[in-house]
Image 1: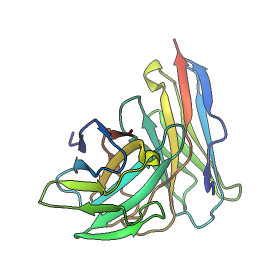
Image 2 (image 1 turned 90 degrees about the vertical axis):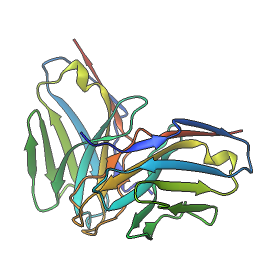
Image 3 (image 1 turned 120 degrees about the horizontal axis):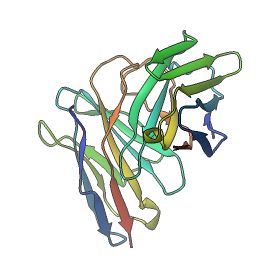
Length: 115
Length: 114
């Protein structure tokens, strides 16, 4: 079964450094998402992306965050200047259809640890 | 701001019995509801969904019930199996528009003992 793949599985970064999290969505999917889960808290939406544009973003997704689809397969999340509170599991997801009932399929996540 | 609430952090059930996981929501405009299952070190896996215009959806051992007047939904697993032990997340979609954020509850950890 096709799956969303994320790399790396664990990223350790010094505070203030830039980090790029990578995702390969399912190949025929059109909509891409990033979520995060801080330890002990809910999974929270960051951003959705369609047709090379952000379609929706949350309050968490401020100017230090950006997303990009640099080629036909990858979808990246960049955090420009990391803070301690950015430590979390980051999940990429994708869905294929324009109907809201199509489920989003999640990758296994990248654990980001900011030191 | 807890639009989707799962008030039971954990549930323990014996193998073969029914597991009932509950979820409450506050926004009457939610369009779809979904249940995801998550094992440690893995991402959430979609289980089953229900439209706000229905009151029941069934898929094998999994049934989701929606009570709109009570703003409550539940996931029934019958019969429960040890492999069902995982964290279960209830999620909602605010409107019928693609690319819309899922709003998650905090999750309920289900433990099924053999």
